Every structure is written in structure tokens, then in C-alpha cells.
Length: 150
Image 1 (cartoon, rainbow, N blue to C red):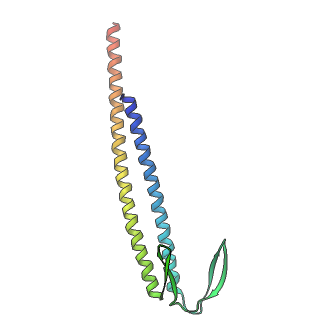
Image 2 (cartoon, rainbow, N blue to C red):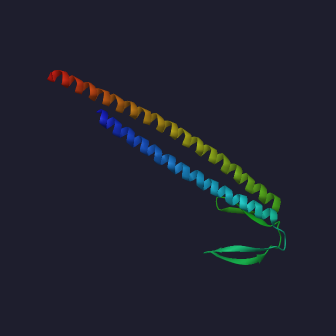
Image 3 (cartoon, helix red, strand yellow):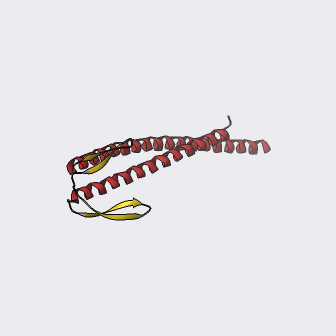
């Protein structure tokens, strides 16, 4: 494989790594958005009182006003399309557990991003070294041709 082909292959590998890194960064953003939603839910549950009037989303940007009958009847999604009724404190505990799981996943993804960054930097350094070697070879060839011409 020629030096030019090797450089092209390195450039492709670097591009793949950059795309993977971008995908992981989008995942981190999505996880952080989910975490912010949970923060909002916890704050809302903490402030709720029986008899409070709230707006319940119906979908499509429409809402209905409703009165909270009992704050100890909070439905919390458990995952896998399952949900359970919890009292106020247990609902908050469930949501905080979800946040901990999200934090763990965010940390894992950030570590993956860091590994990709390191690998990409190594490939970029290798590509730069190869380019420098090619330039030196070209310079030597040019100097050799000049001496032959004399």
C-alpha cells in the first residue's frame, strides 16, 4: 500500500471515529435532557398537595385542568412499559434511582468519548508523521535530481 493510500485510510478511520464521537455526544445530551425532565418531575411532586389544581397534558400541545385528589397516588414509569402507583416519597425515590442510572450511563458514554478522542489523536499524529516523511522523501528526491542535472 502506497503512502498516499495509507493516509487516505487513516483519514477514513479518523472520520469514522469522529462520527462515533458525535453520536455518543448526542446520546449524552439526550440523557442529560432525560435527567432534567426527572428533576422537573421531582420538584413538581415535592410541591404537590392534595386539592392542587394542575394542567395535565393530553398530547398535541393541549392540556386539561385537573384537581389532585391524593398526592400519595403518583404513577411512576418503571421501564419496559410498566408503571406503578407510589406514594409521594416512594415516587421521588424511584425517580432519584432513575437519575442515578442516568448518571452512571452518562459517565460510561463520556469515558467512551474520551477513548475515541485519544484514538483519533493517535491516528492524527500518525498521519502527520507520514506526511512529514513523504515530504522529506520528496525533498530528497528533488535534491537528488538537482545534483544529477549538474
